[in-house]
Length: 227
Image (cartoon, rainbow, N blue to C red):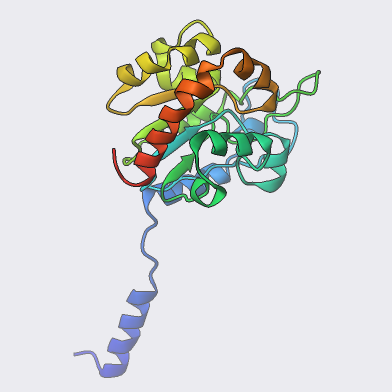
């Protein structure tokens, strides 16, 4: 028989063994350490050090599927810490506290790292390595999502597939049919909330008059646990 001292030592050793991390936690750690756009790039490598930006939890009810971080987000490490984020939160009808509540809102862009700038100073498209490597595995770990906000054409192509109309404007304008077609996990297509799209929003007053109230209702329902 083991004496009392040895039994206590065995108990301490067993208690010190770390429990295995949940699959989502391991996956997020792998994503945040990812360097495939430098080590195994498709085309030119990322022109700067990777800084993947993603927020998710297994209890998230809303998925914001964006494009890729911009320069400010690359610097801050937090998604939508820019005027685009202010506008998106206003569209959703929620404040920063709710928006950054990972237990309810997952923010999973198509590309996790800032892709760099083009010759005109605009953001390049999301890196092509990112979504094939990580996206489906990550979405599989978000079982409680009840609404997908597909922000921009790259996200719409992934989440809508053949349901994408002829470009972003036609896709967003057909949002009612898309909501019905994608049930029971509705996908709502949105333009990017960049202020560069202010002209499009002014030319399409139905967006704020008709789509935004539905968006805010759906967000409120999911945030409060109603599907």
